[in-house]
Structures are given as C-alpha cells and as structure tokens.
Image (cartoon, rainbow over all chains, first blue to last red):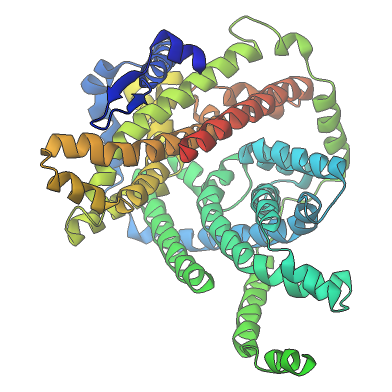
Length: 273
Length: 269
C-alpha cells in the first residue's frame, strides 16, 4: 500500500514538544469505490429496482396475510413430519460430527506430521463444505431413494465438513505441554492423547456439535423440497395447494420447535464452556 | 513426587454419574431417531447411479463450462455472485436498525426482547417460502432471488451485529464526553470505529454463506445457478451438472480464500 501513501501523502502534525507525527490518509475511498462498482454491476445484472419494491411491496404481505390465522386443526398432520425432521438432524449431526474426528486429527499439523496428508485432508474438507446441502440431498435421493435416509445423509455430509474444519483448528491450538509431560512420565502416545488432548478439545467439540445440530434443524426444513423427507415435504405440498393457513401452522410449529431446541442447546452449551 | 501425583489423581473431580446420565440421554435420543429412517426402497442401481454421478463430475461438459453466452456457467456464476452481493448489502442495511433496537444495553428490556423475537421469526421461515413471496412482488428472476437472500441474511447478520453492539467499550464514550465532544463526534469517533470492522467482517462472512446457499433460489425460479443445476440433475445429465458444480465449488473456494484474508486483516486492524 506504499504506492497509495505516495499518491496521497500522509498528514503531518507537529506536536508541542517539537516531534512530528504522521497520520496516514484514510483508505476508505478505495473500499467505497470498490463497493460502489460491485453494487452497480450487481444492480445491472439482477435488475434490482427499489421503486418496484415501493410500488408492489404490499404484494409480499398477501401470502403472509393469508397465513393468518394459522389452521390449528392441521396440527395433527404436522407432528410426525416435524419429529422426522428432528430425528433426521439429530442422527445426521451425530454421524457427521463423529465420523469427522479421525480426519480432523489427520488435518491438524501438530498431530499429523505429514504435510501432504494435512493438505489433502484440508482440501477435502473445504470441497465438501462448498457443496450446497441441497445438492448433496438431491444426490442422496438418487442413490438411497426418496425418504428420510437421504436427508440424514445430506445433513451428515454437511456436519462432517463443518465440524471437521472447526475441530482441526481447535486441535491445532491445543497446549501440547501436558501431552509431552505425560509421554515423559511413561504413558504411551494413545494414552497421552486420551488424557491430555481429548479433555482440552471435548468441550469445544460438544458445544460446536450442539450448535451444528441447532442449525441443521432449520436446514432440514428445506430438504423436504427435493424429497428428502421431514417437514419440508408437507410444507412444499401445502404451498403448492395454496393452503396458506396450513402453511402458517407449519411455520408456527417450526418456530416453536427451533425455539425450544435452541434454548435447550444454549443452556447446555453454557454449562460446557 | 509420586505421592503428590497419586494424591492429585485421587482428588480429581468425580462427576461420572452426571456424564453417564448425559451419555445415556444422548444414546436414547439417537436410538429413538433411528426409528424414522425410511426410504422408498434403496434401488439396486443406487451404486450405478453414484458411479454415473462421479463420472459426470470427472468428465464435465467443458463447452458449457467455458461458454460466454447467457446460458454458460460463467454468466450464471456472475449472476449468482451479484445476487449474493446485493442480497448481503440489502440484508446488512436492514439488519442495522433491527440490531440497534434489540441490543439490550441500548434499549429497554421488553423492546430488546421483541426485537429478538422478530429476528428469530424471520430466521425460521425457509428460504423458498420467501422466494415464493418475493416472486409475487418482482416476478421470477434474479431480483426476487436478491430480496430472498437479503431477508434470509437478516437473521444471522443482525444477531452478530447485536453482539458487536453489546460489546461496545463505553469507557471510550466516557472519555470523549470528558473531552467535551458532541453526540455526533461521539458516534463518529467513539462508536463507528469500534463497530465498523466487526460489521464489515460479518457482512463478508455472510456473503460467503449466501454464495453457497444461492442454489436454493433455483428451486422456486428466483434466478442464479440453482435452477440449471437442479434441472440437469433431475434429467440425469451428469456432465452438465458436473460442469456447473465444478464452477460453483471453484468460485466458492476462491471467494472464501479472499474473504478470509480480508477478515483476518479487519480483525487485526
């Protein structure tokens, strides 16, 4: 950035004691210009137009208004799908976060000394993480057929990459001192790992897994759209039939479920840390 | 020496009952959730299908991938970037007032609680429902996708903004007060410099997520790369799906790499 300083020389102040200090000129103009250019390009391509929003914005609330009041009698048909959604996310999160552990160990430089293995593992985690959940769910329905198994697999794949990345970062920041001390005392490497590293990363692992589970419940609601089971299935169906009071009821149930699960998991995470 | 170690070992916290109870609860929950596992029959050619998908990804449709026309992957990616970018900007702008309203150190408790409730409600509704609602406003196309992205961003972005606002160091404001600064000066020199890096970093992070989630928009015809991808997959044209997926993955990886660099710079100042 020295070129920028030459173009826009820093301001000089002379203090009372005779010293001069420099204040570099602000970089804000570069950022503002960059953001402006990107915004203009984006507005051109997407056709973003605030006047349309102002003129037709009320249309947004038409569907919303039809959802009120939600249809309480539909509740009976929601219970099973919402339980399915919870079960899918529970099992998927658990599978993914347990399976990722050995790979996360191989991806952390202080446990695995082989640079190439570390690089391959990290690349694998990033590529899987970029795969949209919807796409993995769609692929899973092709392989495992329509149903909750496909959704569970998709959630597991996402959790695998998400927890895996957090865990290898966590394992790298572990204090290796106690590990070395235990080795010096005559423990084997496995024992030292179990007693020195695991207690340090376990709270973070559990807390992140819970957080991931929390988010997955919300994510799982979308998966039904591609036939991967759960609440999304009936949500899509009711939207298609324009039964908006039923849709409203589904959203209310989803909201309550997410709220309860988040509260429980936040309580548990506070206990952990 | 050994005695001390043995003593320390003996006096370790003994809360195995608590741990065992937790483990039992988790195992019971997992077994309970196994009950829901069903599918419409894992068809025997599932394995063959997997191989087809793999071969499609390995042999992508290069003509589609490097095509510069409006149907080409490159243009679709550009459109997706634009949707995600403007969506993030609009969402971040919406989030600022919501966040200030729900920050418990600025507003009275009931107002903050209501604000948080609104944010949670906004967050619960799945993206494709918003997509359908916005299509009524703007008609199908990237504009609807952009608005959907902005509304789905509000939940996470305003939550992070609230945390940043609640972490504000009020001592700086006090010292500015003592120096005789006006309210505007306090906001300009006391609050903005504390919030800006955090806000920018959150917005960039959300941009990453929006880029990755933009496929969902294709489900309801709200523009972006999702629709061609899902059509190609449903029609078993794996070469096309492969080329779109490769484009998407490479793009997200590059954007992620850049945004991590920027965010590290932002947090270190």
